[in-house]
Image (cartoon, rainbow, N blue to C red; front, side):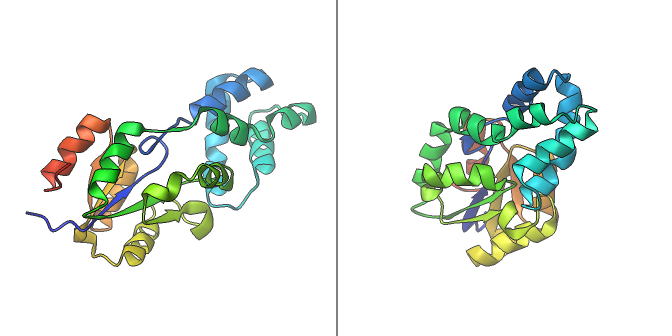
Length: 205
């Protein structure tokens, strides 16, 4: 039986119901750029945005330039889109929150998230972090998953060995990153699957 002491969750797509495609579809409609083309151009800039290296305005300026549509009137309409759409659409996954509340009495609960300052501001305002013990946020540490360093920061904050942690993320590349860091890890699909995975690691819900 594994001696798990901490469970670490991703935010968007796990604890929070959210997809970046919500923003990309709205931006495609506003700009007249094909969704896939804009999505590709925007995702190329996502690393810098989530590391806190560029503002949302600069994010859209670069994405528009790569899409061949660098017009100022479009940029003005896209500015703050991440904030407004996230605030409007992002919601806690209530089934996952129920699980977290049950396990938190017996385990440390942490977060590792690739997140921009824009989304972090909304999360703080809504007190989304009240369900966890500590958070490692990419825009604050300047590192994004699956870079091994971000997992190690979380381990240090939780004061746990890698083998004592279970990491949950919806993206397989981040799950693999956690495993490379020595953690136990499982890919999130839904709350029912999460319960089964927790049980598999000896965590009763």
